[in-house]
Length: 109
Image (cartoon, rainbow, N blue to C red):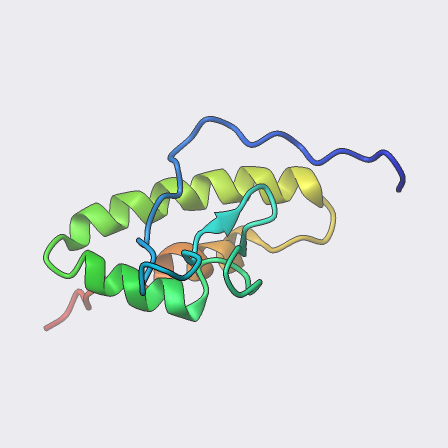
């Protein structure tokens, strides 16, 4: 695999959240196009990123939904180009990026 190049990420939403906490630590942001956390190496959004995003967007759940949906779209594109045959399915990526969000509510009260 010498000389193999990773695809260049597209110019979709820039993954700039969650902010670093504490400020002197590396932020839990994704490394594109692999979508791994640059702070802990887990698939992004990692547990710490999810927690920080929930806190950061506590008063703006629709904004969080839009942000995560855009990144889901970008990640699906990047990860499919990296491994089109046995990468994560769209359903797995939806659960990873969007399905955990705090804005999801039951249709029936």
